Length: 213
Length: 227
Image 1 (spheres, each protein chain N blue to C red):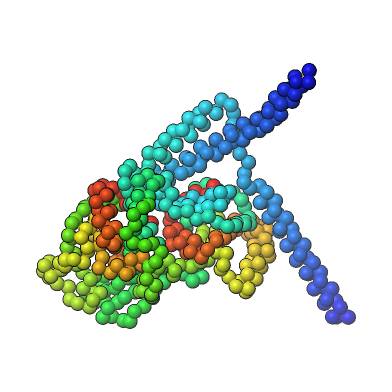
Image 2: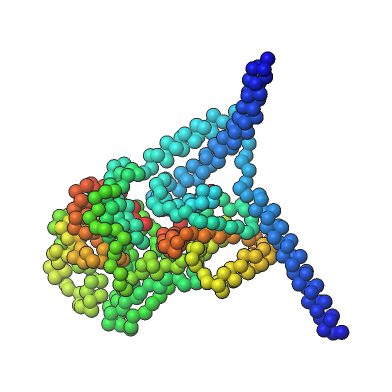
């Protein structure tokens, strides 16, 4: 008798649950039917004003993209594109930041995050046969003491034949490690193969926009 | 007589077809004005923004009105309040398996790993062959380390779940089915009474790389438009 009552109670609870669930689904369907919202009616007298607004906005939007050549860098795919308007002029396989964090254990306890910065930049400098002035993190990473003289920081040949600076010490430059192109291995700079670097250096002027995403 | 009747029928048919088409054009024009206004407010600055076009089934990363990257989604489904379109900001990105940054501490304690913070946003004639980088393990955070399945929470209360067609096994599918067909409808039914109105969108992308690159490129704080 008790078992029978228990079974009836369970069946009723189950049916109740199904009824609530059914109601929930019906409400969901009703909500979904309200999407996409119906367009608002426009009075005939407002039409020229709206057409004018649309034209103005389209004109403003068309003025936003950069004029002439610009560089786009995809840090996830390690690809660099030189573009002119919508046309891709050149594609290069590059190496972007590794995302590794370096922490200084002693001294000033500094911390570096080796990401390629993202955002809108511009070519600030163009250098042939660049020398690398090694920053502090190079010595910390290698477990070496930081030199006091600038001469001890200078290294030639590491950055390839050309470098394009885009601010805050970041460069698009060459590499000795061409087998690592296509991987995220750098300390934030963008490494490019020799042939692509030469073409990019010759084509892109100072002031050209760089979009890194 | 017959010819006149035919012409009259054609004119009438033309009118019947043209009147709704014209009003549709007008409504479309208003929508276009609003979406252009929304986009211009974001595109005039140098920051990246995204455009999620639900009917067009695509998500785009843009800057200054230019499309940097576009992902087409295979399918979508929705539960809850449908008033989610407009300008939004991504407030939180969550994943079960969030990527970890490698931390190097020379001369100190051993290498440790910490949770990765969201990254900050502040052809012809190829020299190298794209798509054939050397495959070996690196001490780095790469695209392949990004999750394929994650959630995005926006400032308007919208919750988007991004997944890829291949993600999830049998157990995962069962959990998903429970969540979608039981949990969400009930939360949607009782949520408004508890002050937690539901608005959940699920986007399914074709391949794993799409999901991973969306996780990589959409950072917390990015603004966008949902159309």
